[in-house]
Image 1 (cartoon, rainbow, N blue to C red):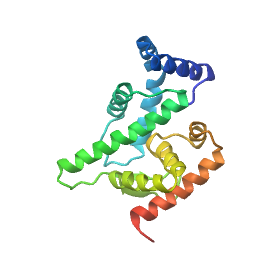
Image 2: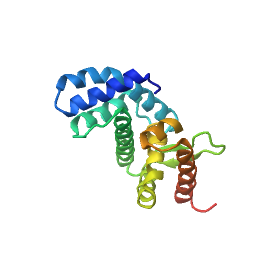
Image 3: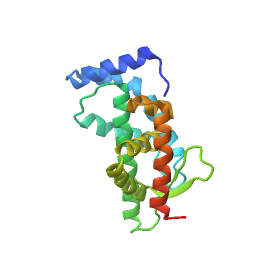
Image 4: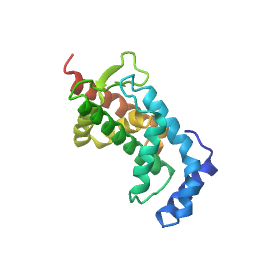
Length: 189
């Protein structure tokens, strides 16, 4: 996800041109963001365990179709990737729900809720989404940190840039949110 500053500025310029109705801007934008989106999707799916069989390319394509179809007031490259992370979350959750429905409630899709933690916790992706929605009511920043770190696979530094806060703030929120989500999803231990 690390891009040189000139490319970051070009992505922001193209996003704004696309927002303002320049259809050709989208054509020039896709090659600049596609590889980063695919890398994020692959990283996310790799860390989600074997239960989520969605392929990175399919995740990126579905997320991108949703992004293109929506009306967003694009502000910057960071804003684009923040929206893309939420969209990837929605795609992954929708996919998990369809799989559960196809199996009539069986075969709950499992994902790991960990990031360099000694004891990864495996949870149902739909239950995680529901718990994350509850967390959002309690602490919106913590919920966004989880969304960016878990669903988009952003680093602490990248998450801090998107949220316009310090990496230390992101680390604290990430640690607290993971503990809260673990308790929500697994009960008191």
